[in-house]
Length: 531
Image 1: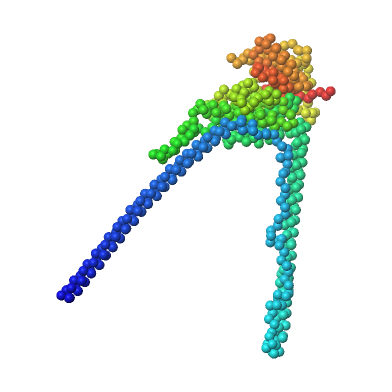
Image 2: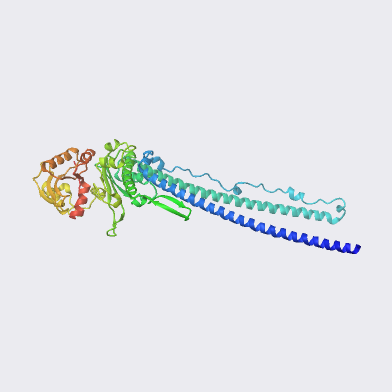
């Protein structure tokens, strides 16, 4: 019984161990399966979080793009208001060299000095023999040799210190010499720059033409426009009429974003763009063209410290491609001439820009987005080619006649021939008593053509408003469609003011020389007789 009982206990214990092992195995399997399920949940959660992050990034991308579009449009709409808060004049003082040359700051390794070594530490390092060592005769000799060796080490250290100190001083001196050389070069350049600025200032206030052109070019080039504006320009100046002529290049309508807004479509994982309406693009581009014109005129008038500008004429062009021919074209979209007095009457913060330009008598393209051109009030080269001074050689006198030397009849024939070559049918009238010439011409074009009255004034001084009034009266009497006043001199602000909104074209001496060269092949001069 006892043995069976013992054997039965063994069997029971073995069975219990097996059940425990199987239970442990099942627990391991359940734990493993649990870990797999947890890993799968983690994977799903991770992917979900990744998808959520991706969606959030796409949404943020759309928000950033929409904010950028709003900012771009805001900048384009604030072209004129933005300049009204600034002083557009140029301070000559700001053109001078303002910064000072930095002080001499050599490296710390070259400025710190190390005291020379002393002999005491070297002597102290030699061990003095004790009473027992002094009993031996050789001890004293060894001690003396050790002292001599210590003194040699001291001397070597001293010599090395002196060599390093000499090297340090040499390097410091070299750095100082280079610093002084750079400082002198900087000061020389600063003096030259400041001298040039002072000369520029004096020439500007002395009303020298090139200084006035340079000053106003600088004013316009420093003007901050939105990205995409070419800001390519030319400036000319007539000192006689105090007229500044500006040729300014505009951006194309492509500067306006074609996208109104963006939206993220999660189901398709795409960003959809809502196009901007063409009517809005056309309207905004017209606003940009008008705003740029008014801003340009405002900036040069406001910056006119020397009060040199009585009249500003602006031609705005755009460089593009003719879709019908594929050729490069450069149509004029705006041409406006305005006097200071009239422009100063404007409150640019409250105007309707396009209405304001029309009120100033501007030629404005009806469809600038389609590059529909207008005729410039004056060609830039007609102003840029100024009067020829008296420095021409004698051999040029016959080939380049002085218009002031012509007789009244010769001058009359010259003007008549010029406009004939320009395509008009001209008929001369009797010589006027003031030495000018009247020519009646006919523009044979259908619709746009008609009768044209041309008067020429061989004036030495600025043409006043009375001559323009006389021309307008002649036009009324003759029933003419247009009047042209040609002068060997320039025009005053009152003359330009009177001609505004009237079918009158004023051609000064520079313009006459330009027309003679480009339409009649005649290179003439205008040299005023001395008193």
